[in-house]
Length: 107
Image 1 (tube, rainbow, N blue to C red):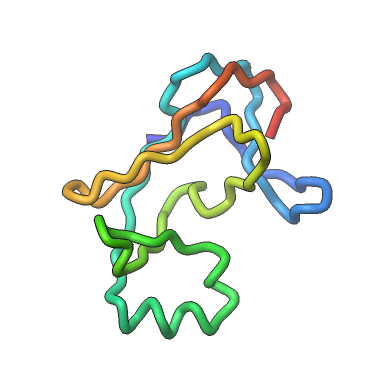
Image 2 (spheres, one colour):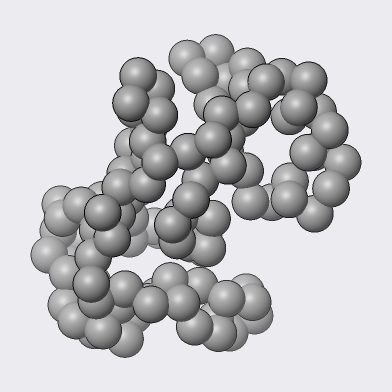
């Protein structure tokens, strides 16, 4: 599931990022994406590549990692953040939820 207002565009000083064409309300789930879980051995290999910046630690003990499909790897980090992610280890998905209202055009 991907909110139909989201798009990827150039982000100043951060490469590319995820933006919204329409306002989003606080607490709204804007994406739920499946993931591909990699073993610990595979994680160590991926960490040696440029993909290192695009994977998520995975598992209760963060013993593995995953590659997230959809827009998930394109969300940039900010302080304070305007979204959070929620991992579902059983379903092998990650959801993105807004922490505050987000205006149209905002990353």
